[in-house]
Structure formats: C-alpha cells, structure tokens
Length: 185
Image (cartoon, rainbow, N blue to C red):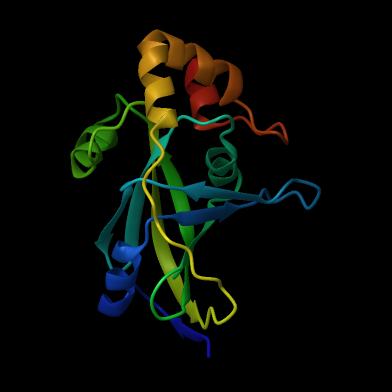
C-alpha cells in the first residue's frame, strides 16, 4: 500500500497539481506544545524541483507554521484525492520563512499569482515523499474557491494588515516568536 520515495517523482507532481486543497503540519520541539495542521486553498503551491517546494502564505488568524519553522524547521505537506483514484501523498522536509522586502522574496514572489494578504512564502526542502492508499477518504465535489479572505485583506489595506499581523501573527499560541514578530521587535 504505502511507498516511500526520496524525492518528488513526476507522477507525484502531476497528482499534487490536480489538488485544490492541501494541508501543512508542523509542531514545536517542546512536547507540551501544540501540533498544528493548516488547510491551504487557492493556487499557492509551487514545485521548483524534486526536492524544493514553496507556497505563498496568506494572512490568517494565527501563524503557527512560521513559528514552528523558526523553532525546529520540521514541516509536512499532505495532499488527498477527493475525486478519482484514491491516494494520500505526504511531503516531509525542513522549511524556512521568506518575508516580504527581502532579496529572496523578490526572487520568489514572481512565481505566484498576486493575492491580497500575502504575508510570507514558506519554502521547504523535501527529504521524503510517502504515498498511502486513501481507500477510506470520501469523495467530495469541488464547487469553487472562497474569496472571503481576499475580500477581507483588500478591505484592511496594507496598514490594516500590518497592524493585524503585529497583533495576531507575531507570537504562536505556544509563545514562540515568529519571523514577523522578530522583524517588528
């Protein structure tokens, strides 16, 4: 059933590109800290090579992934087939955060469609890819993307987004300072 690979193979890339949602998992090193799983929608993920991926991260109510990457770098991506043949695919690796107004941001941001509220790019070096059956995953029909976050971000404007990020995205729920918090302190 499950198979382990050392990199993203062409069939994995094709599968990933068909998915309309993916999940990002991370956790602090502290065993008392919270494990975080975040769903990601929109066309925000890019595969740069068999071992390099990145996604454009939009402003949200928390910033746990970013904090965990500062803490230990561990990140897992999960993709699930909700239509067609069953499969679950996970990418395991080490991640880092790229903030706006840095040379690396300027080099990467052009790979993504511009979306209101973009706060950072999460880059990851993948060291393992695992597929599993997904036989118990139900079928779901895709209807459309939600544009609620984009409308909200546009209404906030850049100053409003900066203030929101300072308040809600600078420190994780476990007290880990995020890269956004490091820049603003």
